Image 1 (cartoon, one colour):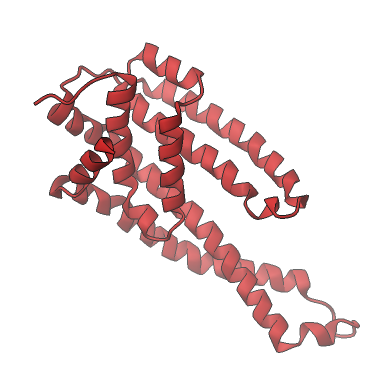
Image 2 (cartoon, rainbow, N blue to C red; image 1 turned 90 degrees about the vertical axis):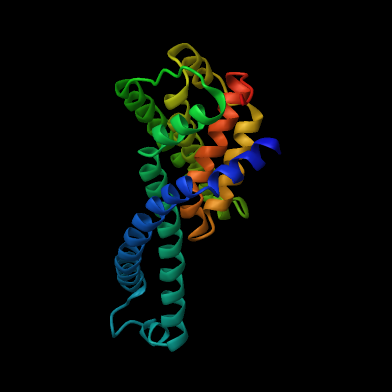
Length: 236
């Protein structure tokens, strides 16, 4: 709770609020364009999927007004699902360019620790490994679509893995030295990091809010990394 209060205080400062609007604005622009394009493409797809020839027995059914409404609703829901997740990861990507500045500012203000960032080459290979594992998890989740009830949430698990790993990679590569970085990513993340990123992931599912809070996520996890991994205390 002390870290949460500290992170909220930092986030509400003018300096970090300016950072927060950068991923929000860029993501909203891309989200709007994607929404317009995505709805149109999905509507055409479902129309072609369910369409039948005029002399078909099912032609009368497809011509019913409520069927057209159902197709429109399905297209809208799928578009919304795609837009939310795409915008969140886009905001996460944009925020990653701000992370070194955020971690540096927090370090200078609270911890005064000599940080050693990880090379871009190493980070690139870690990202590659994460995406390869994500593809495997995504395929397993696709098989689980046949299971009742579970299929409603199965992809949330796959995207949470990607969200957690990319967010923690972004933070730790800007703070930890090579040895601590290797140790952290070689093992499973400690519970407090998993619980934190899970809460952030759920918040990110809320439109707009998830885009605006990306900088807050970085601030909180930065404090958590300094205090729980490096065992540092706040210096006056």
